[in-house]
Image (cartoon, rainbow, N blue to C red):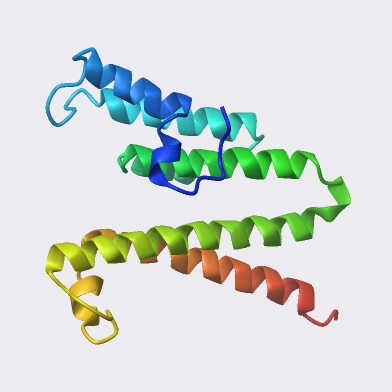
Length: 174
């Protein structure tokens, strides 16, 4: 298990969770539309396991987000698992006194991952909408896409958290 970084979607398929999902399909365990949530449960368990292994404490909202993430495509979920795993490993290698920098780095990495995801979603939305060329010329075609809106709903709070973290460090004492 490499946990990334992944250069392509194809690279995610060799990881344990995507292999398990594929095996479920191959065995005929998954019914059309996954009404029994077998695939979702597999993805959710893998996300929770990655968080636990990385030492991530989860609250109720966090668990809700993990449940939401488990509904995404297998390769997307695996990329998030890879990010959690790598961030946990990177944190374990750093001295404890460097928590501010670790927080900044983790937020920056998360922002980058979500920005890449949003860009992929935007490109897919353009294809679905038949938009050719620069989305700036026809932004409504992309912005009305629900998946793109979800990506932006994740990116916004990450950006705000990064700004708040920077503001705390640069705020005058007093």
